[in-house]
Image: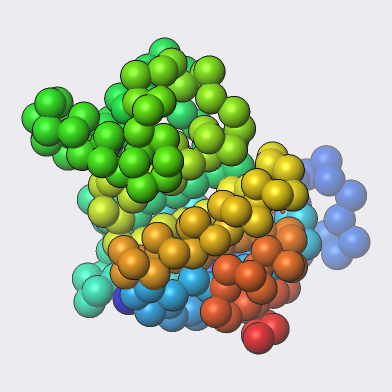
Length: 226
Ligand SMILES: Nc1ncnc2c1ncn2[C@@H]1O[C@H](COP(=O)(O)OP(=O)(O)OP(=O)(O)O)[C@@H](O)[C@H]1O
Ligand SMILES: [Mg+2]
């Protein structure tokens, strides 16, 4: 269970930026609070520049909030480094390692966690099988289609057993059919793995399809949509 309380983050306009109110800060998070239960997906919509990616970066530990706390399963992780949080962050461009095979991309995080290479590869192939990609385990990852690569990225995220899955526009590079299929795949695995998930998207249909609850980020605060 993720519990975010009183998160604050603001930026001042750069000196050369024409500001309507000189030196007024722009709030990306302003006393922002949010709870996400295990197995639940919460969708966050919002205009470009409203702070959605910054919110995920603060949850992941890549950006520090000015105030507020991030707790997961009772641990206050606000000041923990990203690698200690066991959160998985997936971006639109899925950042796979182009020089590695499919299975080694998936096994990577487990090996980082100290798992033996042979064991990690075995686990990676089993996870790939859940996404219909076991027979591609030894392919160079660059030979896969965009949708297949996105499944590899999800398999990698799930293999390290994250407590929280953070998705930033995960399907925006894909065509409509594939988006729909992957929404279903992702939702099923999020539920069965019992992870908490925060999904950022511009696509309200996608947000409604995947999110049990949905919010719009405006002025640094979350307005409930459903
Ligand atoms: N380090 C920084 N210093 C100053 N401004 C920043 C910094 N990081 C982000 N910003 C600004 O904060 C705003 C929010 O950025 P963010 O990437 O979180 O928006 P977003 O909601 O994810 O937008 P999009 O939908 O386009 O991805 C942007 O206007 C960005 O320029
Ligand atoms: Mg963004």
